[in-house]
Image (spheres, rainbow, N blue to C red):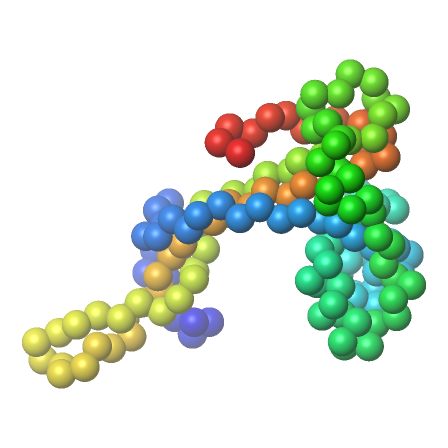
Length: 157
């Protein structure tokens, strides 16, 4: 797909396919000082996080299989324990633990090749890139609401 060029790169594009929202429960904390073991880009991408970045249990299993030391990860309260905690948007006391929510929507991204049909050709041929839209919802534990002041009840979740 890297070789395909856009005819009008400044055009505002609409996704051809809207993929359903995906909810991700981030149940593991990553030791920020050792994050470079996972990716050399973590320090730059997550610079504002300072000491709290999160991942999922499935991702931890992958990294452990790749030989990453388990001391990089710290388990957070279990999902069933977090169910008992309120969402940060509903907590008044900034010092109370809560479950933080962060939503992300990718309005347009290339997701697969597009194939076209022609009377001149018996088989479909590559003629462009199909575009998609995708939304993600991340939920994670924070020990104090003040670490999640942006959280509000998202529409539709």
